[in-house]
Length: 242
Image 1: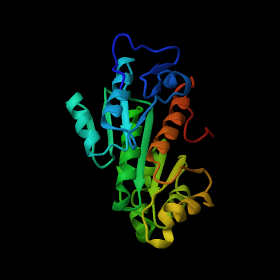
Image 2: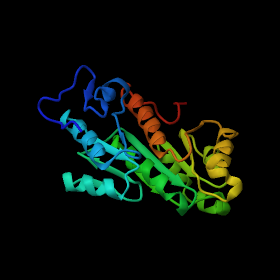
Image 3: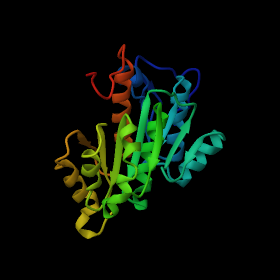
Image 4: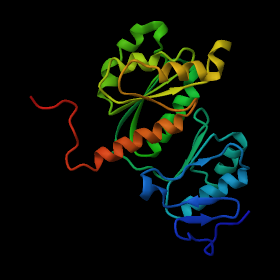
Protein backbone atom coordinates (compact mmCIF):
# COMPACT_ATOMS: atom_id res chain seq x y z
CA UNK A 1 0.00 0.00 0.00
CA UNK A 2 1.35 3.41 -0.94
CA UNK A 3 1.73 5.63 2.10
CA UNK A 4 0.31 9.13 2.04
CA UNK A 5 3.42 11.30 2.31
CA UNK A 6 4.62 14.69 1.13
CA UNK A 7 5.59 13.01 -2.15
CA UNK A 8 2.05 11.70 -2.77
CA UNK A 9 0.11 14.74 -3.89
CA UNK A 10 -2.90 15.32 -6.12
CA UNK A 11 -2.16 15.06 -9.84
CA UNK A 12 -4.88 17.19 -11.33
CA UNK A 13 -8.08 15.99 -9.73
CA UNK A 14 -6.76 12.60 -8.60
CA UNK A 15 -4.70 11.50 -5.62
CA UNK A 16 -3.13 8.18 -6.62
CA UNK A 17 -2.53 5.89 -3.64
CA UNK A 18 -1.55 2.92 -5.76
CA UNK A 19 -4.54 0.81 -4.72
CA UNK A 20 -7.06 3.65 -5.13
CA UNK A 21 -7.40 6.90 -7.06
CA UNK A 22 -9.13 9.48 -4.88
CA UNK A 23 -11.33 12.03 -6.64
CA UNK A 24 -10.18 14.95 -4.53
CA UNK A 25 -12.00 17.63 -6.57
CA UNK A 26 -15.39 15.95 -6.34
CA UNK A 27 -16.75 18.38 -3.76
CA UNK A 28 -15.92 21.38 -5.94
CA UNK A 29 -17.36 19.68 -9.01
CA UNK A 30 -20.51 18.10 -7.58
CA UNK A 31 -21.01 19.57 -4.11
CA UNK A 32 -20.51 16.14 -2.52
CA UNK A 33 -17.00 15.02 -1.48
CA UNK A 34 -15.76 11.52 -2.14
CA UNK A 35 -16.91 9.13 0.59
CA UNK A 36 -15.09 5.86 1.22
CA UNK A 37 -17.18 2.70 0.81
CA UNK A 38 -15.41 0.41 3.27
CA UNK A 39 -17.09 -2.90 2.43
CA UNK A 40 -14.74 -5.11 0.43
CA UNK A 41 -11.66 -3.07 1.40
CA UNK A 42 -9.05 -4.06 3.96
CA UNK A 43 -8.72 -1.96 7.12
CA UNK A 44 -5.39 -0.66 5.82
CA UNK A 45 -6.96 0.42 2.53
CA UNK A 46 -9.80 2.25 4.27
CA UNK A 47 -7.38 4.05 6.58
CA UNK A 48 -5.22 4.93 3.58
CA UNK A 49 -8.17 6.42 1.70
CA UNK A 50 -9.31 8.42 4.71
CA UNK A 51 -5.77 9.66 5.30
CA UNK A 52 -5.55 10.72 1.67
CA UNK A 53 -8.72 12.75 1.94
CA UNK A 54 -7.47 14.39 5.14
CA UNK A 55 -4.14 15.20 3.47
CA UNK A 56 -6.03 17.25 0.89
CA UNK A 57 -7.85 19.19 3.61
CA UNK A 58 -11.20 17.43 3.30
CA UNK A 59 -13.49 15.89 5.85
CA UNK A 60 -13.13 12.11 5.56
CA UNK A 61 -16.18 9.86 5.80
CA UNK A 62 -16.49 6.10 5.40
CA UNK A 63 -19.63 3.98 5.14
CA UNK A 64 -20.24 0.26 5.71
CA UNK A 65 -17.54 0.14 8.36
CA UNK A 66 -17.26 -3.20 10.16
CA UNK A 67 -15.67 -3.80 13.56
CA UNK A 68 -12.16 -4.46 12.26
CA UNK A 69 -12.18 -1.35 10.11
CA UNK A 70 -13.59 0.69 13.00
CA UNK A 71 -10.75 -0.50 15.24
CA UNK A 72 -8.15 0.49 12.63
CA UNK A 73 -9.74 3.93 12.21
CA UNK A 74 -9.86 4.56 15.95
CA UNK A 75 -6.25 3.45 16.32
CA UNK A 76 -5.18 6.02 13.71
CA UNK A 77 -7.59 8.76 14.82
CA UNK A 78 -8.63 8.33 18.47
CA UNK A 79 -11.07 11.25 18.16
CA UNK A 80 -12.82 9.84 15.08
CA UNK A 81 -16.62 9.93 15.15
CA UNK A 82 -17.75 6.29 14.89
CA UNK A 83 -21.37 5.14 14.76
CA UNK A 84 -21.68 1.35 15.04
CA UNK A 85 -25.39 1.38 14.14
CA UNK A 86 -24.87 3.49 11.03
CA UNK A 87 -21.64 1.58 10.30
CA UNK A 88 -20.03 4.91 9.48
CA UNK A 89 -16.94 6.86 10.50
CA UNK A 90 -16.00 10.51 10.19
CA UNK A 91 -12.68 12.28 10.68
CA UNK A 92 -12.81 16.06 10.78
CA UNK A 93 -15.44 18.64 11.59
CA UNK A 94 -18.46 18.62 9.25
CA UNK A 95 -19.82 21.82 7.72
CA UNK A 96 -23.18 23.12 8.87
CA UNK A 97 -26.12 25.29 7.97
CA UNK A 98 -27.22 23.99 4.57
CA UNK A 99 -30.73 23.07 5.77
CA UNK A 100 -32.89 20.75 7.81
CA UNK A 101 -33.33 17.05 7.07
CA UNK A 102 -35.68 14.71 8.90
CA UNK A 103 -34.92 11.00 8.66
CA UNK A 104 -38.05 8.99 9.43
CA UNK A 105 -38.08 5.21 9.65
CA UNK A 106 -40.93 2.73 9.65
CA UNK A 107 -39.56 0.36 12.28
CA UNK A 108 -36.66 -0.31 14.62
CA UNK A 109 -35.34 -2.94 12.21
CA UNK A 110 -34.71 -0.14 9.68
CA UNK A 111 -32.34 1.60 12.12
CA UNK A 112 -29.00 0.81 10.38
CA UNK A 113 -30.08 2.35 7.09
CA UNK A 114 -31.78 5.30 8.78
CA UNK A 115 -28.68 5.89 10.89
CA UNK A 116 -26.47 5.82 7.79
CA UNK A 117 -28.67 8.42 6.08
CA UNK A 118 -28.60 10.63 9.17
CA UNK A 119 -24.84 10.30 9.70
CA UNK A 120 -23.99 11.13 6.09
CA UNK A 121 -26.47 14.02 5.87
CA UNK A 122 -24.95 15.52 9.01
CA UNK A 123 -21.46 15.00 7.60
CA UNK A 124 -22.49 16.95 4.49
CA UNK A 125 -23.73 19.93 6.49
CA UNK A 126 -27.40 19.30 7.27
CA UNK A 127 -29.14 19.67 10.60
CA UNK A 128 -30.66 16.22 11.12
CA UNK A 129 -33.63 15.06 13.17
CA UNK A 130 -34.48 11.37 13.57
CA UNK A 131 -38.05 10.08 13.91
CA UNK A 132 -38.21 6.31 14.37
CA UNK A 133 -40.86 3.59 14.42
CA UNK A 134 -43.80 5.38 12.80
CA UNK A 135 -44.75 2.77 10.20
CA UNK A 136 -48.17 2.51 8.65
CA UNK A 137 -49.22 -0.41 10.86
CA UNK A 138 -49.98 2.31 13.43
CA UNK A 139 -50.81 5.32 11.28
CA UNK A 140 -51.64 7.52 14.28
CA UNK A 141 -47.93 7.52 15.14
CA UNK A 142 -47.12 9.17 11.81
CA UNK A 143 -49.90 11.73 12.10
CA UNK A 144 -48.62 12.78 15.52
CA UNK A 145 -45.29 13.93 14.01
CA UNK A 146 -46.69 15.52 10.86
CA UNK A 147 -45.61 18.99 12.00
CA UNK A 148 -42.00 17.86 12.37
CA UNK A 149 -42.05 16.38 8.88
CA UNK A 150 -43.58 19.49 7.32
CA UNK A 151 -40.95 21.70 8.96
CA UNK A 152 -38.11 19.84 7.23
CA UNK A 153 -36.48 21.05 4.03
CA UNK A 154 -36.10 17.43 2.92
CA UNK A 155 -37.59 14.25 4.40
CA UNK A 156 -35.80 10.92 4.03
CA UNK A 157 -38.16 7.97 4.53
CA UNK A 158 -36.63 4.59 5.34
CA UNK A 159 -38.91 1.54 5.23
CA UNK A 160 -38.88 -2.17 4.49
CA UNK A 161 -41.70 -4.74 4.44
CA UNK A 162 -44.30 -3.18 2.09
CA UNK A 163 -42.53 0.20 1.90
CA UNK A 164 -45.82 2.06 2.22
CA UNK A 165 -44.51 4.72 4.59
CA UNK A 166 -42.99 6.77 1.76
CA UNK A 167 -46.36 7.24 0.05
CA UNK A 168 -48.03 8.11 3.35
CA UNK A 169 -45.42 10.77 4.09
CA UNK A 170 -45.46 12.05 0.51
CA UNK A 171 -49.20 12.59 0.77
CA UNK A 172 -48.90 14.62 3.99
CA UNK A 173 -46.08 17.13 3.42
CA UNK A 174 -44.90 19.74 0.95
CA UNK A 175 -41.24 18.87 1.56
CA UNK A 176 -39.37 16.80 -1.03
CA UNK A 177 -39.35 13.14 0.00
CA UNK A 178 -36.47 10.73 -0.62
CA UNK A 179 -37.55 7.12 -0.14
CA UNK A 180 -35.10 4.40 0.86
CA UNK A 181 -36.33 0.79 0.66
CA UNK A 182 -34.66 -1.58 3.10
CA UNK A 183 -34.05 -5.31 2.89
CA UNK A 184 -36.18 -5.84 6.03
CA UNK A 185 -39.14 -8.18 5.69
CA UNK A 186 -40.35 -11.74 5.37
CA UNK A 187 -39.84 -13.90 2.28
CA UNK A 188 -42.24 -12.13 -0.05
CA UNK A 189 -40.39 -8.87 0.64
CA UNK A 190 -37.61 -10.35 -1.55
CA UNK A 191 -34.79 -8.62 0.37
CA UNK A 192 -36.21 -5.17 -0.23
CA UNK A 193 -37.47 -5.59 -3.77
CA UNK A 194 -41.12 -5.38 -2.68
CA UNK A 195 -40.49 -2.10 -0.85
CA UNK A 196 -38.50 -0.76 -3.81
CA UNK A 197 -41.35 -1.47 -6.25
CA UNK A 198 -43.93 0.02 -3.88
CA UNK A 199 -41.92 3.22 -3.59
CA UNK A 200 -41.28 3.42 -7.33
CA UNK A 201 -45.02 3.05 -7.91
CA UNK A 202 -45.98 5.65 -5.32
CA UNK A 203 -49.00 7.74 -6.29
CA UNK A 204 -47.83 10.53 -3.96
CA UNK A 205 -46.13 13.27 -6.03
CA UNK A 206 -42.69 14.51 -5.11
CA UNK A 207 -41.24 11.17 -3.98
CA UNK A 208 -37.91 9.99 -5.39
CA UNK A 209 -36.39 6.57 -4.64
CA UNK A 210 -32.87 5.30 -3.99
CA UNK A 211 -31.51 1.79 -4.27
CA UNK A 212 -32.21 -0.80 -1.56
CA UNK A 213 -30.49 0.00 1.78
CA UNK A 214 -28.85 3.08 0.23
CA UNK A 215 -29.01 5.56 3.09
CA UNK A 216 -25.87 7.22 1.73
CA UNK A 217 -27.52 7.92 -1.61
CA UNK A 218 -30.54 9.52 0.04
CA UNK A 219 -28.34 11.79 2.15
CA UNK A 220 -26.26 12.80 -0.86
CA UNK A 221 -29.39 13.69 -2.85
CA UNK A 222 -30.77 15.72 0.04
CA UNK A 223 -27.48 17.59 0.43
CA UNK A 224 -27.39 18.42 -3.27
CA UNK A 225 -30.88 19.90 -3.07
CA UNK A 226 -29.99 21.94 -0.02
CA UNK A 227 -26.71 23.14 -1.53
CA UNK A 228 -28.51 24.40 -4.63
CA UNK A 229 -31.09 26.24 -2.55
CA UNK A 230 -28.41 27.84 -0.40
CA UNK A 231 -26.67 29.21 -3.52
CA UNK A 232 -29.72 31.27 -4.52
CA UNK A 233 -29.72 34.96 -3.58
CA UNK A 234 -33.01 34.45 -1.75
CA UNK A 235 -33.96 31.01 -0.60
CA UNK A 236 -37.46 30.16 -1.84
CA UNK A 237 -40.21 30.21 0.77
CA UNK A 238 -42.36 27.21 1.43
CA UNK A 239 -45.42 28.98 0.14
CA UNK A 240 -45.76 31.79 -2.46
CA UNK A 241 -46.96 35.17 -1.31
CA UNK A 242 -50.65 35.91 -1.86
